[in-house]
Amino acid sequence: MKFFQKIKKYNYLINISILLNIILFIFLLFYIYLYINKGYQPINFSRESNTSYKFISPILDCEDNNADTSSSLIYSKMNDFIGNLVKKYNIQTTSVYYRDLNNGPWYGYNEKEYFYPASLMKLPVMIALFKYSEADHSILNKKVLIKQSDIDNVLFQNIKPSKHLEAGKEYTMLELVNYMIKESDNAAFNIIKANFPSDKYINEVFKQVGVDIQTDNNEVVLRTKDYAGFFRVLYNASYLNKDNSELSLKILSESDFKDGLVSGVPDDVVVAHKFGERSIDGNGLISQSQLPDGTKQLHDCGIVYSSKNDPYILCVMTRGSDFKNQESFVGDVSHYVYDNMTKK
Image (tube, rainbow, N blue to C red; front, side):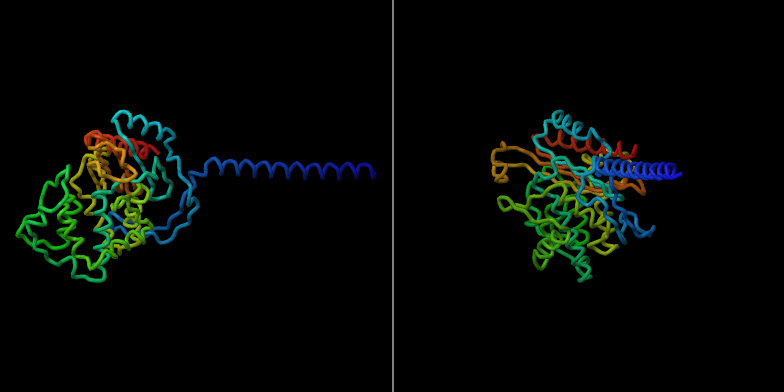
């Protein structure tokens, strides 16, 4: 009798051991799964459900499950695709940054490379002005008389505005913002900056977005990932109030430049974006002192509203020798990302 009791007890212990090993094995498999798929862990956002806004989606709360992890973006061949495009269009250097605005996964290609922002700087200036207007409600209606010197004393633009400010005519500051963003007008940019009490308002935008102001040869330099932060704070309405965030993105969506990100998506897809272009004359960045004269930089960054529930940030910066090739490069990257996003 005791013998059978021992047998029964022994079988019981074996069953417990087997069960524990099964549990341990399942736990190990689960851990391996999480490790392999760590780039796909989402950020769970709780957003305000307000249909009166078209461009923004304010965050109420969020749970970040993947704060510092770069996603493979669903496209395992993204690096190869960009590498082939670099050869096709003879691009010297490029940087690409993508971020899903709903669940947070991101992708970066050479995203730590610095570039001249050029006209991309007009976006933080607009944000600074709208923030200033939240304290001084009259600033946007302030009228400024345009002088001929305001128009003459600007940097040369390869991609020229379709409309220009007229000397002898008055414009409100809000009208100047529209010229600065939609037309990328350099005169409007200079006039708006001159109407700030100090540069601290613009510097504060960089600080609040979490972008360190880096300079090289006394000129600001930025990375794609850093620049994307300006669009994130607008979309989330986390720096400007909701109305000003909405207005900012609406103005950005009406940009006249259609040869970059916009060219890569269907005509009915809205893109709120800003482009920048600059030619290096041989006296460029210290870190780029070996670049040949005539090196060109072209960038386009913005939010692509691929559908009501699936917007994303795409930022592409380039150095090359031919603006048309660089425009085509940006358009092809935009098309690739959009095409894969819609098939997700």
